[in-house]
Amino acid sequence: MDTIAIGSIEYAVAHLHTPVVMILGHEKCGAVTAAYDDHKEGNITAIVEKIKPGIASVERSDDKAADVVKCAAANVKAVMEEIMAKSEIVRKAVESGETKLVGAMYHLSDGRVETIA
Image 1: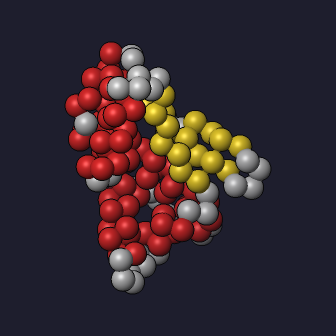
Image 2: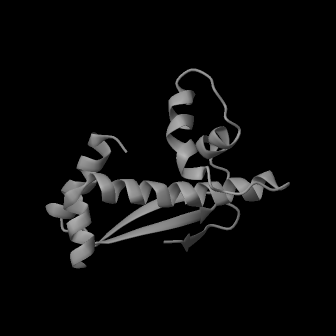
């Protein structure tokens, strides 16, 4: 989350009084897959390095597809934590109940959106 992205969220919360901010991940996410594989190539490396800490605690199994879904969910939670840590405006709105910060996963296979946090 760079300052421009956080600033956009802050504007929505403080000036538009947005009641819900949703951080939405999805299965088969290329960026998360690249981080899972520790892929390094050009500017993709910057994305991988940003995601890796948020997925480091996800236990790996023999099912890469399932692992990537778990990693995408972990990344959603990491982004939510980062927003709360970096934005006093969002943090205060969430703590006061003015705004809800919701994490969710979009399942491409069936179009379902599942809240996770």
